[in-house]
Length: 340
Ligand code: 5GP
Ligand code: MN
Image (cartoon, rainbow, N blue to C red; front, side, top):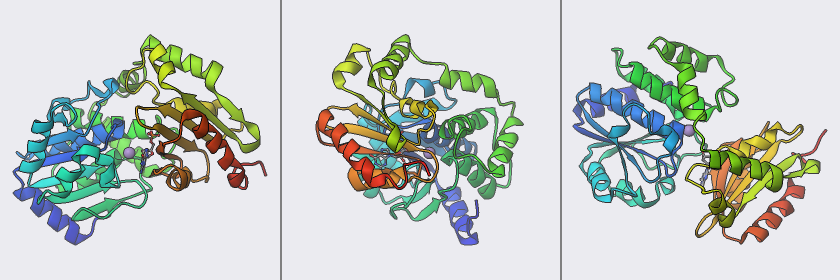
């Protein structure tokens, strides 16, 4: 991370004089959001700062074991406590999102707060709402950025096994266990350093990835057998799930996480989509291999955005129309999505 001298000076000063810090992350948080937030909170607490994490909604089960999880408050369940943490903070860190819209109900509390704000993120095109924006879109994860940030701001070594574990979960989950967004030497230097804190790498993998319920496995099997649509002429595959189907498999939050990546195992697939019916909309997830920018698809047609190879948005049509609309877009992308 290459922070300017001025930014380092300001950040050091703000952190040095902060008594209470709130760390915010995005709605529907993932391993990077939670791992990087808890890591930063624990680092700041070592500096005698009362640092807390506020999650807008829904902490997935596979992250509940993370060290420092007791420092987090979920706004959707504990509105008053979460609001107080934000209102009392003299410094606010925003991690792993590029737009206050991703905060849902917490958005106004943040925008109305007089506290200094620091955004640390790796998504494209961050909205400028913070006093300092640290945006590095080529980074694997915010976890990696927090590692660099801590090294640059604090001269002493503030890492320990708990913090290294949180950072590793952030990096591991945002790269699909080093499957993508991780093809550069520096990330392995970071992981190499984290290993020095007796990181239990294999155990961490197992705690995150070997944690599915049987219902979730059955739902996955059902998707592969009955719901996977492959359109070889566009190197595209998609899966859709209605509310009725989700209920049939006793769906729990997070159960469809990762489904969007599975069709890449079919030879030739370069673009995948997952459509999941919610109360008032259909949530769309997109993934691609290579240089096909799914964030553009999400922004142009689904009120969304994201990264080049991973993006999402919403459809307000019914499921049938959502799927036919999606298929109707594909010829327009044929230049990207056909063999040549
Ligand atoms: P997922 O498909 O896992 O929900 O999201 C993948 C990525 O797409 C996220 O990391 C985020 O960058 C982006 N994303 C997902 N949903 C939305 C959305 O509704 N709006 C925006 N702007 N980005 C989204
Ligand atoms: Mn991330």
